[in-house]
Length: 337
Image 1 (cartoon, rainbow, N blue to C red):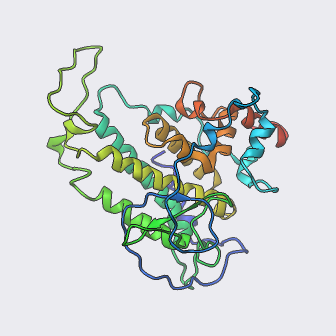
Image 2: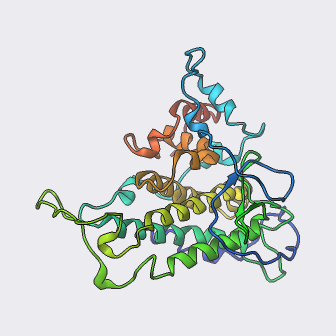
Image 3: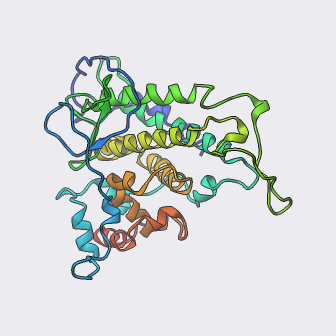
């Protein structure tokens, strides 16, 4: 995976898709409070009231409590409210990967690595991979144009059913163009990773985990939290969950709004590889909740049916295998290897 992007940068300045939009409109500067809120699609950019707590789509597609009937795969797929012409990435022939193998081995924590150190490593590593794709659609060319801009992406969305808001200086959720959202999310995540109070870099503070196969772990004293032994702050896990949630939203926007651009540059397999690895890591380390995955649930179902997510993994458990198999069937069968 470390060499996955060795050939991508050389293609960054290549020819873009002919349907790329015109020059980017000037965006106003926005403050950078922690982003937290996901809201349904809105037709205006006014402040939005908080949403009531509701279960995720994946948690509500089980047995019908009134009739006791289990919905069919077709009914569940309909409940996803996909557009009539399904996205290209839901065709299993375009859901392939650039590498083969079990990404779970790259996500599961080694026995002797302290959990805080492992989570920090995963956050930095996945951000390093994702920022490559962000720059591809976000950075401007010499003529001042960018693939993602306010005219093409007037809000940060993942299809017609999901849009994401940012908290303004008064901590109110507001819709902003996707280009501006990507600017803020890069500044937010980079600022967190570069903060030594959140991600300490002193080698003398690195700890390890006791391997129960060879020794009895010593009891800890006082209040415990992930990363305490290595000097990570008490809210470290919460911060990493927020970072992963923001990275997921960026992936969702890239798939729903810019997959064709990546396909035109022959980079769709690279992003598929990075995103499936990301989902395995997020679910294995409890960095994302099931509700967070809702915008990309159909692709998760498809990859479970294709064997991308191994049985027994948490990513496989949150998928609807029957829906994935139905998507494979609609594409004419599994793709040729």
